[in-house]
Length: 71
Image 1 (spheres, rainbow, N blue to C red):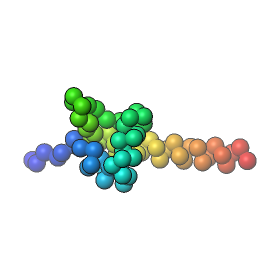
Image 2 (image 1 turned 45 degrees about the horizontal axis):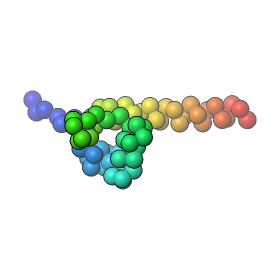
Image 3 (image 1 turned 30 degrees about the vertical axis):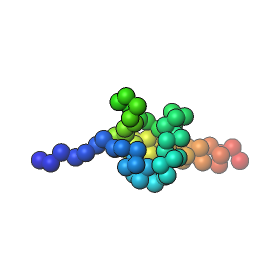
Image 4 (image 1 turned 60 degrees about the vertical axis):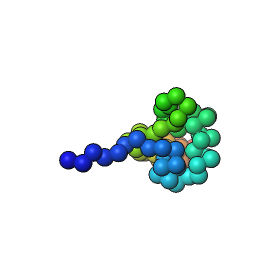
């Protein structure tokens, strides 16, 4: 059974998220994106990023529904 790679470098994470490398690092510095460090190196896991994306989508839908109800 082949092992799937879940650890991602910043370049891979930026591509996975569809954003630029600089934007990704900016989000890391602001602690807006889940990540972990080993020394000064920054890593991401595919599963955690996918969950983060899912949560962002849910929050945007809830936010949109809240705006509709307030009108």
